Length: 87
Image 1 (tube, rainbow, N blue to C red):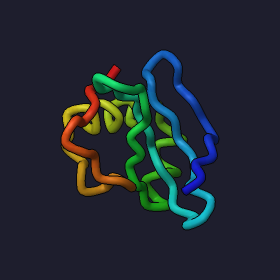
Image 2 (cartoon, rainbow, N blue to C red; image 1 turned 120 degrees about the horizontal axis):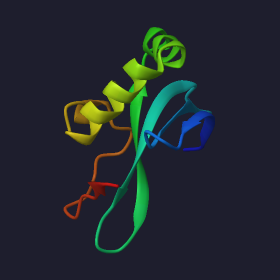
Image 3 (cartoon, helix red, strand yellow; image 1 turned 180 degrees about the horizontal axis):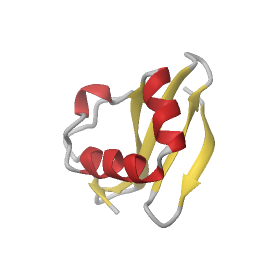
Image 4 (cartoon, rainbow, N blue to C red; image 1 turned 135 degrees about the vertical axis):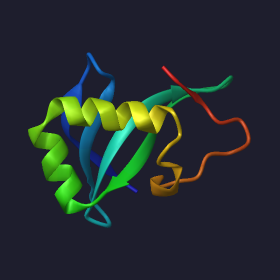
């Protein structure tokens, strides 16, 4: 998988973009476990992506809900047993 960023919010700690092999849009948040810092990538529909690109408050709220694990079914890759915590 190759993730290409289109927008980054350093303040709210998330990014939006596209996974280039599948063409699916994503929102990503940074997380850390005991070994490594990494990103969790959450799948978005075309409509969701456009809405989040146009409304940064809504995008921040969605990122926060991802941090609370409310959208785990949307993850591109399921986490292992040592799942990271949001940074």
